[in-house]
Length: 410
Image (cartoon, rainbow, N blue to C red; front, side, top):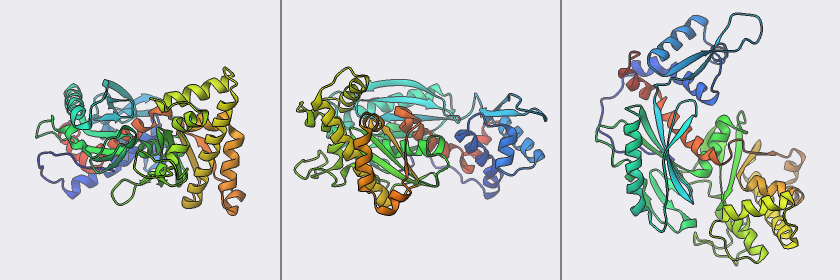
């Protein structure tokens, strides 16, 4: 799920320097997961004495890592402050490679993002469009004026390390995502990290969304096909090579259907806009997400009352619920979050979804059925997850020690 970019060798950071920044790392990651947390709450959460908290926050402010604002009074006692990202603090460059097009964004510690550039692939292959996006990454690094410290890539395909293994829905095969940082100078401190969109969407839900606080959570994303991830203590379980969670290619579907991945009977083909179109007798849609969103929205609003559409949605909702039940039997999560068009499918045909889910569960799971929650972050979940991945990198004690060397707090 993570890889280092090509960068100039640097002298190692001493153990004492890493220890000096270790508590600061904890505090900054707490601010990332809870932007606006008060100084008092953060002190309690980290079990720090008042004096130690003051010293730590002053050091982080001096290093341009943390900002403070007066917090609204909530009762008697001394006033406190809320903690935020410093306006001149480190940034993450996020590269969003989705099915329809790409974006390059800059994000800060508190999860705020701003778009730098966006575009479409057209009929190009990765080797053709990745250099163009690399130029955008270079512009974003220049725009940050030295504040960018990591590049985090989110891909709607199978990823291991810094390599795209397969982007089945667009027919792309293996590509080197390391190309995205080739325009940076050899002395650049940026590190390249990459992950699948469903994996990173799940990470966002575990860190700051509907699954926050769950020890074991399952996340499912339905877009063009279905992907997901199991998270344990907010950490994605991605397998030996980082390519785990390809749930859409489990044989939960019709064995007569051939998936673009090369396998037969993939669950992918049963639960998205392609399945809805097939059940209705429509031709395969150019944009399965837009097709599903429009059809589900029209039906929910009562714009259409087509029996074929209603039947198609019920079939897809049942297959979605049944597949999630199979994953519950496999992973035993505390709860499940769903994103993409999955919430729309569930809410358009709740009875069919619940029937598929309940009938597919083992008996003991039906006694204490794991809740299925809509994700809080919607379409931005994968980008926020990529940002979280980058924040993990830039707030490590080693990275903070190097950042501190550049600031008055070093």
